[in-house]
Image (cartoon, rainbow, N blue to C red; front, side):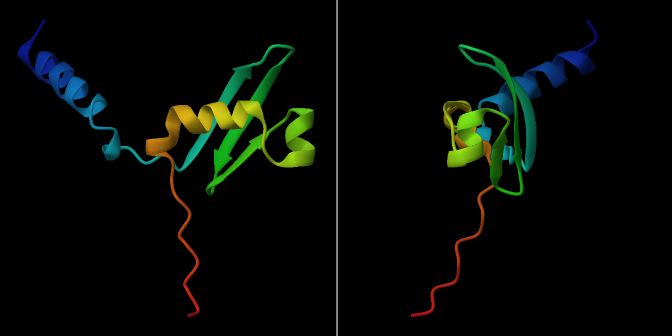
Length: 84
């Protein structure tokens, strides 16, 4: 293996341990639930899932699981300015 690829592999290992380098702004995944497979999306700081529960509650086990997995890397919506 040539030395340039070896240095890239080492750099990739280093980057993978520094999750603060990554900021996910949009994301799409297929989530295999207990009963079905669902398309889940994250965009503009908001989750979407095609499962029935999400349609009514705007949150579900699929989005919560992905939130826990990716928490450190997801784009945060800016906090509203305080009026006090």
